[in-house]
Image (cartoon, rainbow, N blue to C red; front, side, top):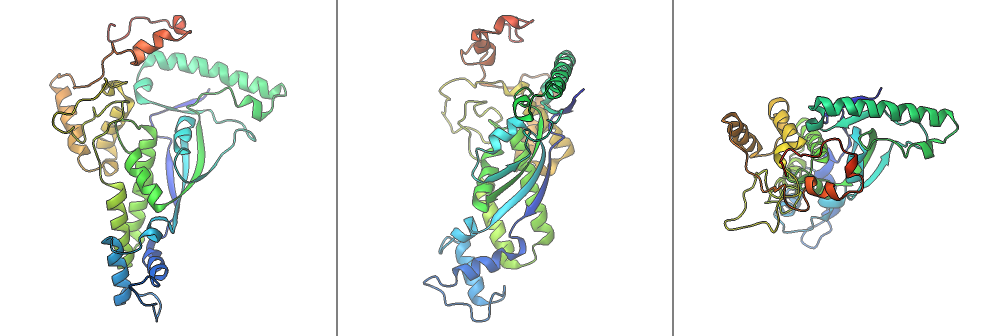
Length: 332
């Protein structure tokens, strides 16, 4: 029988390469021929006035920053993400090398969102269904089916390993975008792990002061600023950044954040991995945990009567009559 992993506990990340302690030297050597500088006579030194000037003017927006943005790459080894996450990750700018199900048997380990994992009846049914699919997969392979054909019949939750490489700018912009709570979940956690691996490496290994200056600047301008979310997945219901006064969403949130597995993951991170949280998230989580302790209902722009909500739209699917429960939790 396959293994259902609660939440994103199967995901592991390793930083493979980055400019690290060499970023200052590379930026200065590349930029030394710009119109306001003279070539470095004695090579790079963090104490050289010309090197200091180049690094300072890059971070102040006065000179050529593109090498710092795109002149070096960062790469990671990633293990245990779902194929759902893989489909999202490979939409980002970069290049990828993923494990193939066309040359070896599929994994039978499954990333399982916590809201589902915490439901005993659903998990019992999932295990029964998965056991039958797993048995069928073995029979298809034993019956002569190629890996290439047999891989079509498996859960999107199956884990897969991948390597990922991107420019610094593109990676840090993905950190900013994909750690948005109002529309990202598993990939949100993945980018938090990668961002932490980078920050840990910088703290541990970067001793060159100009490199450190450039790293701090890159992280500050690309990864850290958080803005009000306008995506309809959950609207801006997580409320890390409040809406401007008088702002109204055009339609209700398409999903209920209060029953989301990402809410459960944030609460778990609060207790177990607080260094993965961004500024303001600790207070955000404490606010809704305190409300729940008091028995208060958490505010949401989700409306189960809205035609695009899951409980309404599923009724239009041609397979809806196969469900065993027709009365949803909202009573609509």
